[in-house]
Image (cartoon, rainbow, N blue to C red; front, side, top):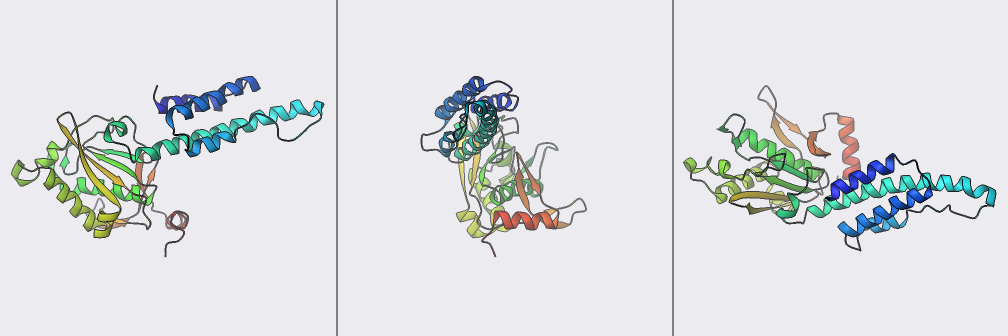
Length: 270
């Protein structure tokens, strides 16, 4: 069973828990086994798990102990929910540095995004570098403005491997290759962000799944906020600020929400 299946099943069982302390001990044991299976011993999840306890804190008279025991079980339930959230966060963060073969096993998330193409509009079967490139820039800016992560180009939302052949054909009258693709992507990054962003804030890699080539863009957590210019329905360019919301990239329209997010995410930025 995969990490996500185990952690989701555990969360359901914890949230619907209505048993006694012996049943809670079983949930704690499941949590320990999950942590041991998926995390190195020095990971933060073990620190959080170490604080999960079913025993009441302090010393009580016998007639009070049972009441405090019930409270302790309720507190333990909350602690396990917190552990599960930390475990998900830590597991996703570890994906950023993993090879493609490990990354592709996981669903899209706060730190992982799949995009089918960079240049080729699959829906309309045509070369549309402006529109498709804009979609890729939204994803990269959202990852940078949030917690960083990985963008896979050449992969559908359902993890189907498409490869980059359609994109390659949009260069040099159908005879383009990886170098043309990478040059185009780098130019987009420089034009939308900056040369230093393209150099210092991400890495571009290529790998193969069978005969199909995939592009991996590993995006570091940005130290400064970045906006990008996107076209609206009337064809006018507008500056937008994107962040990751679960498994999607969303813009912040409300100025007050934008100001609050910037203060929280970039407290030292002037």
